[in-house]
Length: 174
Image 1 (tube, rainbow, N blue to C red):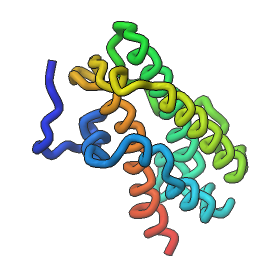
Image 2 (cartoon, helix red, strand yellow; image 1 turned 90 degrees about the vertical axis):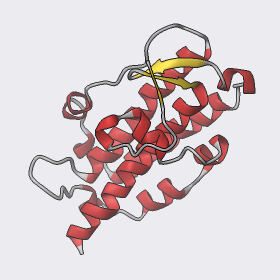
Image 3 (cartoon, helix red, strand yellow; image 1 turned 120 degrees about the vertical axis):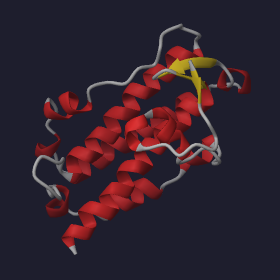
């Protein structure tokens, strides 16, 4: 069992610790209430939504769908942890999930509505949690974490992908 280091530099392939490191100093409720991701996504038109910056890489629509799927999966796992169900919170096969979805067939507006709906459900769940529940400890990808840290990593994952869209997809489109 490994604790997350607050001083170590993590990389995306490290999973949970990397995502948490992107948001560790931000407040949980403000992270989930921020409209910045939705505002940014609403600026992406249909043509850009279908764009992939390299062969074999996801389109922006697929990235948005993946962010939404990730939050759905992780919120269920957060629910399990909040109820003290003793399961290790492992990852999942993101490529399998994206390849079996139909994100590229959906309009950007539908994908934005979906991510917005999932976020509203997440906020509703988080609002039911007590401070005591947020301190419940569990295991995520081999790291001992609190429920609050696990929840924050969901937004860290989102930030990671939004940064990739801005840095790689939009840079190529300019």
